[in-house]
Image 1 (cartoon, rainbow, N blue to C red):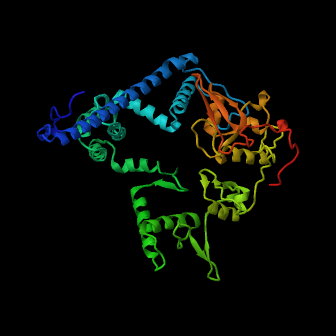
Image 2: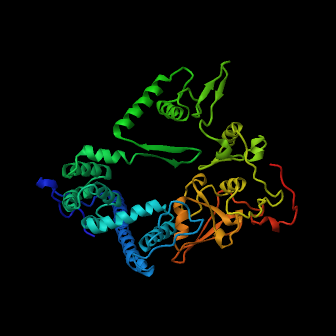
Image 3: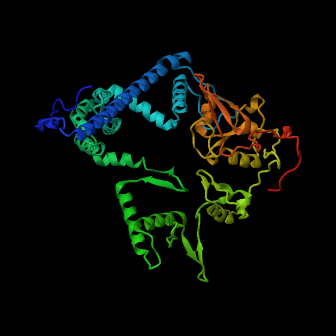
Length: 481
């Protein structure tokens, strides 16, 4: 690898650059030792950059192999996929062709092997293809260790909206900056250069960008989560200013919240109830009734009947086991009890009093009845395909062994699959098999085997799952809750 201080790269547009810096070995032996260790870190960073470039090449190589060899093995790009049976999920027009099947299997294999979401894999494959085919000098700089993957990704992000014929000039001008600037400064420089080269007006591009607005949640530790919205800049800044005004207006001698906490509380109040109110130190809104009694208004907008599971002993205040908030995970017992207090109804899941195995019976119809759906939603929590976190409430209930092939409508043959993975299961060569306790074994076309486990497995206290008819002891005894 070359030393990046060997020569000075000419800045963009022919502006003369500063002389290249020269390293001098320190006379102080202590600092000489420090410099040696620093050099090791620098070389390690360069090696990691080179490995990242190697990963880009490998990803694109696997994509090209899939698009040629795998597609050919499936009958060629014009070969059509099957229509699927009654479990194949709705909305599938005419089956999948070989190209679609190969791509979906490629993404699934990588996602399962690397434990990365499929959407992230799609992005990595697209980035690898674009960098390899359209920004070769950037990949070469990454291979030499001169730039990081974040610099390469920033280059690609800004180049993507330019016409293909402008990419080479854009890369030539910006690459010297990538070698010298931090990622944030380089991104700003690249964004400015992109504006100068872009053939479409910023107004037209803004209209297209607004179409990509969305809101998403990222779960955090300790019962917290980030709610993020991508909006037009004027809407986001105006909303932030409005929250600031509300927060600054909520001041009293007894309110020790700082401005950021008040902003967050006002944001939650507006979304959940349409009004703003004072809040406690823990962020829970406080409401007063006609008599002036202050009540803690925990969980605006949450429907505890379907959203929170509370251990019975915790509900009775006889234990401190955490509750389970649907789509999040464990929550503290006090919050679980407060949410359960507002529940309009309860769903019973009957279990064996000794083995704790769910008491299930076969259904003779393809339709999954409501009580069994509720039990499945409690067990699975999310889509059961490897790496998918789509909440069960937004998924289909799928027969692992298709009903048309003799599969029973019972909990041991059912699982939640989001609509995309429901169709994926029926149109690709991925195989699934139910295991004990609600676990599912997934075998990919390349022969890799993965096991997905439910959020709340139905199991005996010794950890082994038993079908109801094999639980001989205490047969027929059912707990009343």
